[in-house]
Amino acid sequence: MSVDATQPYDEGNVFAKILRGEIPCDKVYEDDHALAFRDINPQAPTHVLVIPKAAYVSWNDFSEKAGEAEIAGFVRAVGKVGRDLGLVEPGYRLLANIGSDAHQEVGHLHVHLFAGKKLGPMLAG
Image (cartoon, rainbow, N blue to C red; front, side, top):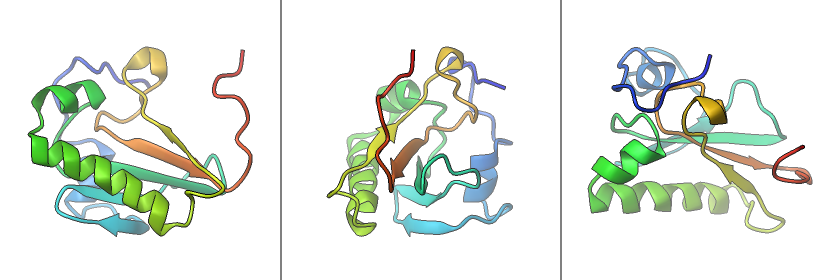
C-alpha cells in the first residue's frame, strides 16, 4: 500500500517501531541524526535503508521542517554509509520515494541505497 505523503506522521509505522527498538534491524550505521540498516527484502546485492531519527513522512516534510543541523547530519550519514560500505567505486544508487505515485510504502522518510551490481536504467518504460 502506498503512502499519502501529505498525511500526518504515523507513530505506528514500521520504521518508528525500529527506532523505538520494538522491531530488530540489521544495523549498518547509527549516529545522532540517522539510522541505516539492511532492507529485509533486498532489491540488489547491497540494499540499505537510511532513515532520520526524527518523525518525518517524506523528503518534502523533512526539507520543510527539519533544522539545518538535522538536514546536514542526515545527508552526511547517507554519504558515510556509502563510503563505509566501500561503494563509492564502483558506484551506487540513491532513491527516495515520495507519495503514492512514487510507491512510497512506509510513511517515514527513507533513502534506499542500492549497489553490488550494474543497476541498469533509472526508470523502465
